[in-house]
Length: 190
Image (cartoon, rainbow, N blue to C red; front, side, top):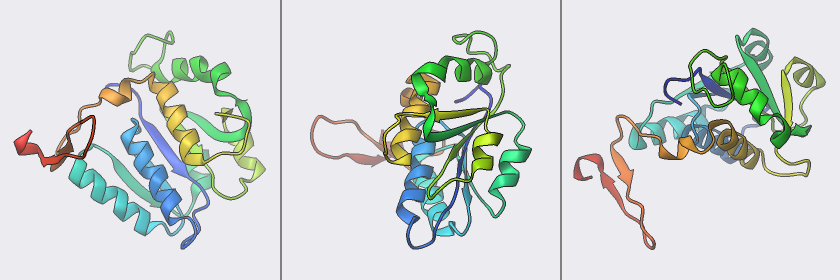
C-alpha cells in the first residue's frame, strides 16, 4: 500500500502446463489486494505476461518478476518473511505482530518505519528450509485449501481492508460497480 514498506509475493514451485492458472491467480490476487510486486519462480513467463497485461489495462503500480533462484530471494530479503502454509501458526494469532513489524511502531500506527514483507506462497511440497528461513509460518486455516485463498485472506488481514479502496494509476479501463450486470469503461469516460 502506498506510503508503507514494500509487500512482495514470492510464488514457489511453478510447474509449466500444470500451474499456469494458479500462478497467474496468485499474481492477480497479489496485485488486486495491495502487494507491490510478485516474484514468480521458474518458467512462469506466460503467467507474468497475463498479470502484466492486466496491470497495463486496469492500472498499477505493480511489478512482476521471474526468478530461477527463489531460495536466494528468501535468503537475501531485507525485511520480514511470511510463509503461508496450512501447518503454520493461526493468522488471527500473529496478524497484529506481523502488521506491527511491517508498519513499524504500534499495530495501528500506519507509519512507514517498518520492514518490507515477503509473502511466500508454495505450490507443490515446500522444502523444510523455507519453513526455517521464514520469520513466520502462517496458516490462514489449518485445513487444506487454495494458496490463492490463503494469500487473499492474509493480505486483507495485513492491510485491514484498506486495499479494497485503493486508487489505481495509469489504467486504460475501469470496472463500474453495479448490483447486476457488467460495466467496464475506458478511464476517460469515468
